[in-house]
Length: 256
Image 1 (spheres, rainbow, N blue to C red):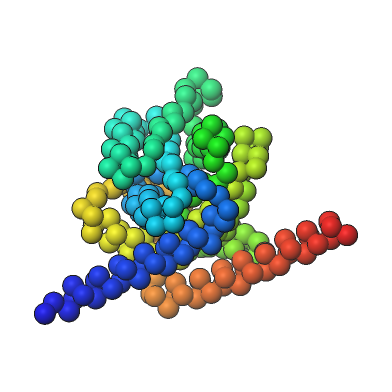
Image 2: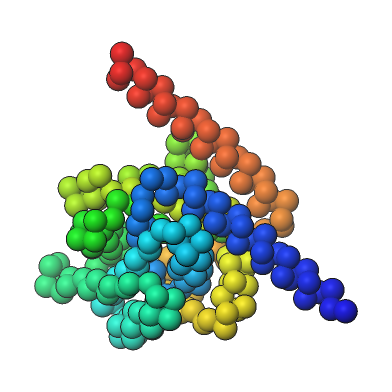
């Protein structure tokens, strides 16, 4: 008997059930869910689990990859995502950012982020998609908490990325929602989902560039003990509850 194999299968099944439940909770009435897929392990896990959810629930998923044109490999990576989507029978689009000539130098991360969300919002409108799923994970939550704590953020900022939120761009993202079904999952357990299907993922070289605060924070998180991670998640959970309560109070006041 191979007990370890049985345990692996049980853990994989439990993860999938939890993930599908998260998709259920966040997508609501939307028949079609958009998936933002970069080719990294987090977003490819989102693609695999999102496609499985759609099949199980009789829903539709469509995917898009933004090619920022900032690295020579980016186009080939986007085409690699397209090939995986074809295997999963998920319609896919490559969205290209024509940033050259818009500013004097190379675009920064903030500019690239805004452009990415604007392109996704335009694509969502063309596909009649009202909600897009992003592949942020539990690890991203912890990284965000530490970065914002270092910057002196209050409870509102320490709540981190919310499971459901409006698009951050205006007017392109008007009426568009973003959901994050994978916030309760660790990066490594999600990579096990990909390994089980013999799917590789892209490692962005910028993820090793220590000039970026996110990279330095990720290295710090990798050294944290499990107990420290759990404490951070509990603090973030309390901050999320406070933020939701504040929003509910504001809405109630506006309805008076």
